[in-house]
Structures are given as C-alpha cells and as structure tokens.
Image 1 (cartoon, protein in one colour):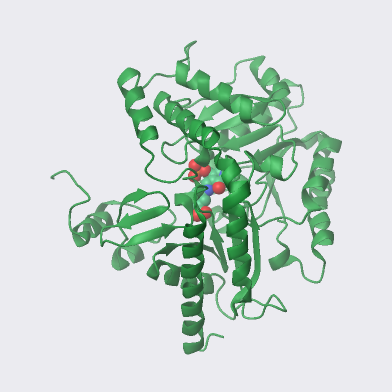
Image 2: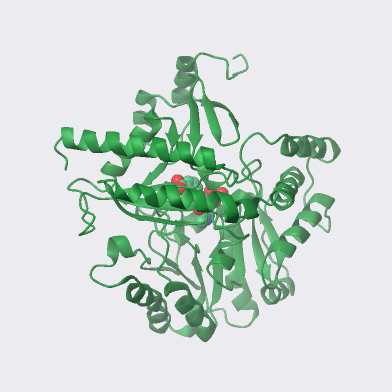
Length: 461
Ligand code: PXG
C-alpha cells in the first residue's frame, strides 16, 4: 500500500476510509454510503476540504482549537521537543523540563489553591483519574464508604468506561454496561427544555436542590463528590440560571462534598476568563482540563488539584498513571499554546472584541421564525430550534431531526455548526475577528432560512 496522502482523489480517500476506519459516534455503514468530507488543511478559523471548499469552523474542531489553526510556533515547539526528548515517562522517580514547566504554569493560571496537576492524555482519562482520586482521598481519610459520585443527566465527561459513566448521556449508557457502580445522576438545569411554567431562577434553584436531596437520600457518609461542567457543552451549551451555581456551591460546602468542575470545554478562555469556574464563581477542589490546554494541537489533559486533596493523595502511593501522563511533546506544545494565549492577550480579545461581536450576531438570529432562545456566554453559545417560540414547543418529529436538517444546511453553506438534538451550538476559535463573525452570521442565517423552507416544503411545520 502506498503512503496515503491528501492528494489522492476524494473518492479514493472516501473508499479507504469506509473500508478501514471506524468513526467515533457514527453509524459507520450509513456513513460509508454517504461518504465522509475529507479535511485537508486549515488556517485561522477556516478549514479546507479535498473538493476545494473553504469552511468556516464555528466549532473550533471539537471545542478545542482556541488559538485557531496553523500556528507555526506550536509545530516548531513539537519538532524541537521531538528532537531533544521525544518521550520519557514520569513514573519511577523521573521528571523532565516540559512537564515541570507546564504544571507550574497551570498552577499559576488556575484559581485559588489549585496548585497541582496530574496529567493524562485526554479529558476522558483525566475524569477517570478523578473517579479514582476522590474515592482514594476519602478512603485515605478513613471514610471508604464515601464513594458515590453525583453527576447530571445530559452531562458529558468522556467516553471511557469511567468517564462515560460520569456522563449522563442515555444513549451511551445503553451500550457496554455503563454506568459503573456508585455513580448517580440528578437532573440538569436546562430551563428551556424542562423548566415548564417555572421562572428561570426558581427552576435553577430547584435543580440545584436536587443535589441536596440526593445527598440526604444516600447519606452524607456515602457521597464523595459532585462533578459538573460549569456550562454543559456537548449537552447543547446549557447555560444554567443564575441561581444554580451558588446553591450547588452552598450544598457542596455544607456537606463536605468534593466539587469537580469539568473545564474540558470551559477552560482556557472559552467563557471569557481563563476558567469557567471564574466566570461562574465556582470554587472547585479539582478541575478537569484538556482541549484548549493545547488548542487541540496535541492530545493532553489533566486534573488540577487543590492543596488539601493533593496532600492527602500524596501521603501514600496513588496506584494510577498513564504511559503518556505528561508526554514531553504534548507538554511543550501546550506551553507554547499558553504562551500565545497570554502574550497575545487572547482572553482580552475575547472580552473586548470577539465576545461582544459574537453575542450581537447570535442574539440577532432570534428574530428568525425557527429560533427560540439564543444563549451565549463568552465564546460558547446555542440556540433552540422550535416551531413556536412563545410556547417553547417541540417539533412533531423525532428529537434531533430538525437539528440534523439545520446542520446539513450549515454544511452545505460551508459552515461547521453542530446540533445537539434540536439545539444548534457554536464554539468558534477565540481568535475570530469581527469580519469572521459577520460571515458566520450570514452563513448561519442562510442555513436557517433553507432549513425553514425545507420544513415548509415537507409540511413538517
Ligand atoms: N469533559 C467534557 C466537558 C468534554 O466536553 C470530555 C470531558 C472528554 O474529553 P476527551 O478528550 O476524552 O474527548 C469532553 C469532550 C461533541 C463532543 O460532539 C464533545 C467532546 C468530545 C467529543 C465530541 O460535542 N467533549
């Protein structure tokens, strides 16, 4: 077999893809029939495909390419590190400069006393670490029965057996015997879909209080931790009512439950601050990080751990670690990414330029007949598709059908915007310019118009 390059004809690449490559979260037989879109290169906020299309990536890959595509500095950092020390582990009393520098940098950026980092290769692995870490923490403190971790329905925390169990995605739990024992899921603070007649704030409070009820039902001596994304990402960019997080914080403090903020999407500028915990005023004991840590240029994740938990875990041997924990090349690339975020004041750009422009464009879509609420914090937003804004009605179709139709129209207009059931979500690179945002808005509106016309044609609304 010759080397496979981007220069093969599209059909040939698609055929090889269909024959040999199993895609994540896909029905592969169906996908093989339709053919995949082959992405060949990318620069800034634009992707290029094998057919010559230039596609505006309003998802920053999978919520991760925060500094945009094509930054040579990161490629150079990787090449330099590969030449100098391509791999060494951090087990057996060894360490190396890139992992040391990155851990120290993350400790500097992270709020409060989150001063310690346990590295992993991804967000899923980091959350697996968290499961074992919080349970080990309580066991070491002489409370081995505190092993239940409370999470939320429609949360996403990864795809491994542990992190998939933490997540609250029903279709994932339906496959492969998830969840593992001692993981509980309470309801999510999704007012649009589940708020009924309650006002947002009362609903937010009620949903937070489900945590207290769960703790009281299980017994305080059984609950180890609560895990949540500051803002749910893969669940559809669900921005909780303002009442939600203060009440969650109060409950965690009152019952001495460890709070894990899963910052895999929210971290590294996405919400307009370094961490979503700062934007939402949350004080976690552990933060899960990945994605924006390296802007997706290298696979790397980690658990950022507060002094007290690190001290307890460090008092004995923690029998846990990955071959690629603190991989030197991934660390070197992440460091270069953080340097760019900091020195180019990317978060300042978000606060002063990108987010204001994006919010104006996004809320401007709310006059569209298909669009219910538009919500956005920093650089992550969503809109609800609905046949009736006033009643927040659902479509008379399988949930997700309308969203899928809209996503297809986005693709057709060279715009990557994801759908989660019938919500459309955006999470563009943080470096988008007002011109890019204008273009994004134009393409999004065209896609919505075409979707609306198609629904009318097919008598779906
Ligand atoms: N936590 C959160 C909050 C995430 O969003 C993970 C953990 C897992 O990270 P890894 O690196 O193991 O994938 C994620 C990942 C989507 C989508 O379609 C979202 C993610 C991954 C894949 C698809 O929105 N988020």
